[in-house]
Structures are given as structure tokens and as C-alpha cells.
Image 1 (tube, protein in one colour):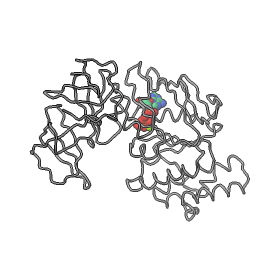
Image 2 (cartoon, rainbow, N blue to C red):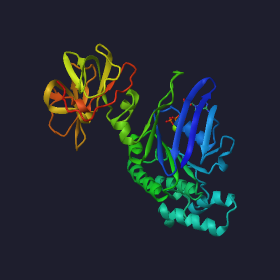
Image 3 (tube, protein in one colour):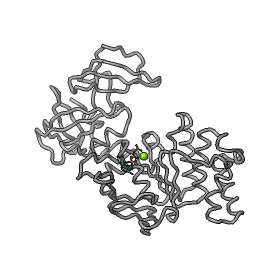
Image 4 (cartoon, rainbow, N blue to C red):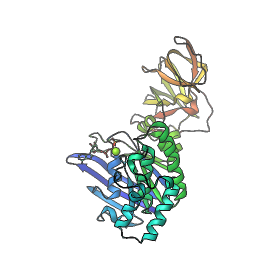
Length: 374
Ligand SMILES: Nc1ncnc2c1ncn2[C@@H]1O[C@H](COP(=O)(O)OP(=O)(O)OP(=O)(O)O)[C@@H](O)[C@H]1O
Ligand SMILES: [Mg+2]
């Protein structure tokens, strides 16, 4: 069953268009993550679903019912914000109960829901404390608890972990994943900047992009599972956004169409990319893309000069100056002793390459192909 359906959502503030043509379905029980650069409209879209903002155009349906006209409290959604405004003079228990008392539920039902939420979120020993005596992570769990006790159809999270330190973020991320498993029929929509959160939590990622004055552009760059976005980015924007460090891009042109992909000419080199040629023809300008973790260092016909190395313990990132592009190529290496100034051979495997046409649209990859870079 489709829990939330957005059709033709548009939103402008004054003459500035923020969201354009958002069509999206979120299934019952699905964990959907909205991600994208700052200002691209993630919070605005979430607030439109919650009913805190009206769309300029378009329909919002929850469980098949159009809810555009319904106020937030009637939509059966619960929202957890980045700044978790708890009532400071109330205990954790009172904070959890507050919304339910407002709904005039029976005391026994309130007690049952509060006890269950406290148990799920490991808040039971803290129920009599006030927020001032809690850590940031505990306070955020109380904020999530306030949403859980309402038993909503849909949870909306707007960057709920961004005020926490790195360790606590990881812990709370795991708690949210467990919570989603426990409440398995409840849909969750989660806004974040953090692609690790997006990759680890999402069943479905919705990558939004800023319209930046480009009137004919739609807001959604791609919708897919985390691995679809990683392996098959639809365009250059998605390719550069997903993955850290970012994909390397190399400008080239089509030299020839081969049976197992496209041969591109870059500087003095011919590089084969295992992609379906589509409408491309010899001479067309294209961009090659390769992720740092897919560059094969140590052998191959290409060479680069090591300009810089970042050691991260388990692996290193090597910045290679090459004649392929003005920007150094970033390559991941397992070696711990790479000398700056040394010359390294490398290979760009055909099946790891991405290729984007003149409009930055990706060509479908032929992952069965084995031909390597010339
Ligand atoms: N009430 C408002 N009036 C005018 N412009 C607004 C209003 N609310 C948001 N905007 C603009 O809409 C755009 C999208 O804002 P939004 O808060 O949805 O972005 P976001 O993707 O959540 O960004 P961030 O990652 O920084 O939280 C921004 O350019 C913002 O300045
Ligand atoms: Mg936001």
C-alpha cells in the first residue's frame, strides 16, 4: 500500500521557485531518505507533507486520501526536528505524555504507550529526569519518543542527528534503524545532509537538487536504492553527490563505438568505457567518471605523479597529477608508503567507468563487459 503520494508538487517563495514537479510515492513501511545540498528544498518538502507549509501546486495523499486541506494534527504524521524543543520544566515522562493528554486519551492507554516507547528507546531509567539533566543523545531520544507515542502512520525526521557529536550520531543512527525494524509498517521520511546516514538507513533515497534559477529543471535528480544511486547514477549531479571522496571526472570525446562499449579519446589516450552508446557518435563531447575506489593503482598504461597522499589508517587517498585532466585524480590505495613525487602506473577499468553525454546524462553501463582501458 502506498502510504504517501506526492503529485506535481511545486513550491515557490515569492518569485523564487524552490520545488518543481515533485512526483513521488512512499510505500507503507518504507524508509525514505531525502538528501541534497543545502537549500535544495528538503525541509520544505517535508513540511509540505506534514502540513506546516502549503504547496503552490500539487496534491499530497496519505493512504490514498488527499490531505492538502487537513491541518498538521489531522494528518496522522509525527515530525522530529533537528532542534528538539523539549519542555524544560517537565520530566521525560511528562514530555512524552504531553501530546497524548492533549488528545484526551485514557490514562491507562497513555501509560501503556509511554512505557512502550521508553522501553524501545532505553529511556525507562530516565523517566523522572528533566531535560536539563540529560545528554544531547538522550534528549533526542525523548524527542523521538514523543513522536512514537502518537503511533503515527508516518514519521518525518528533519536532520534529527545533526546536533549530536560523531560517536552519538552513529549510535543514534543504529537506534533509528532498529526502531524502523520494530515499527515495520510505519513509513519514515528522513532528511539529512549526511550521505552515510542516507546510504545506511534508506530503502529508498530521493536525491534533490537546487533549481538555482533553472526554471525547466525538476527538483528530483534521482530516486533509487542506495546501491542503484552508487552504481547507476542517472546523471553527473548524482554521480558527484553520492560517494566520498567524489567521483573523478575527465573530459573526452567519442573516438569510436566498439562492440563492448565506447572508446573515448582523452589527451593522447584511448580509454574504453563499457557503456551502451545510445545516440552517441564519433566526435561527441563526453565526460568519463571513475570513483577513487575503482582506479587500479600499480599497473596499466596510464601514469600519474603523486602530488599528495591522505592516510586514513585502513587506506589512503592518493592525488595523482595526470595528463587526463587538470584536476588531480583521487585514487584509493591500501598501501601505507606512497612517496610524494613518485610516478605511479594506473588503470581505469572499462567496467568501472561511467560516461556522461553532453547534457550530463549517464549512458547505461554494460557491467558484463570485461575489456580494460587501452
Ligand atoms: N519562508 C521562506 N521564505 C522564503 N524562502 C524560503 C522560506 N523557507 C525556505 N526558503 C528558501 O527555500 C529554499 C529551500 O529551503 P529548505 O529549508 O527547504 O532547504 P533544505 O534543503 O532543507 O536546506 P538545509 O539542508 O540547509 O536545511 C532555500 O533557498 C530557502 O532560502
Ligand atoms: Mg533543511
